[in-house]
Amino acid sequence: MEALLKPTLYAADGTLQGGRCTCGHVFFPMQGHGCEVCGRHGADLQPMTLQGRGTLLSSTVVHLHADKARPAPFTIGKIMLADGPVVRTLLVDAAREVEPGTAMATTLVAVGTGDDGQAILDLRFKPEG
Ligand SMILES: [Zn+2]
Image (cartoon, rainbow, N blue to C red; front, side):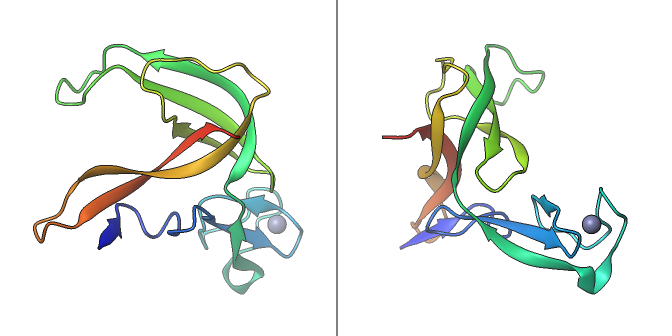
């Protein structure tokens, strides 16, 4: 068995839990506080499943993190999702920058083991194909 580290943000099939406003604005993650474009809130904001695909805008390798308990290096990417929102996320390769413009897709990787021995999975992006 496997468990997702952040099940409110993504699903086991690699899709993302975003939202859409009645004005057409698509955002991630899902929230009901208010649309950043038009200010509507509440029922005007509805959950929307976003494809786990996008285009890399930039990436950077972090060699030293302020939190020394955090393993480094790791690579952060800024990705424009196919559905519109831009997300900052971890890339699969810990120490390799990726060319901007590269097509990216989500993948789930094991990041630990739960008390009951089940694998805990977290979401990363990797070059597609
Ligand atoms: Zn709106």
